[in-house]
Picture (cartoon, rainbow, N blue to C red):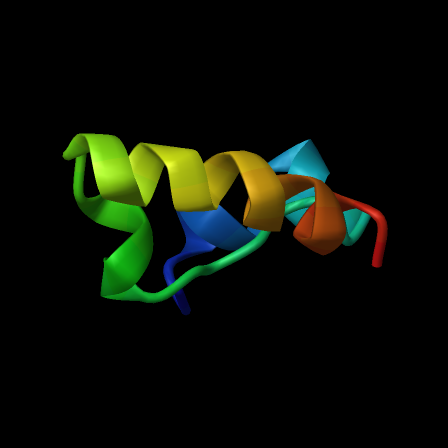
Length: 45
């Protein structure tokens, strides 16, 4: 997260990039259903 490439991304500069925990990286049906509820909450912050 401290690399120059990361810091120079326009989304990072504009506060539009989010770092999420490992629970977001599973692709099983239960997790995907959970993501459908949680992702909009994160994006509305």
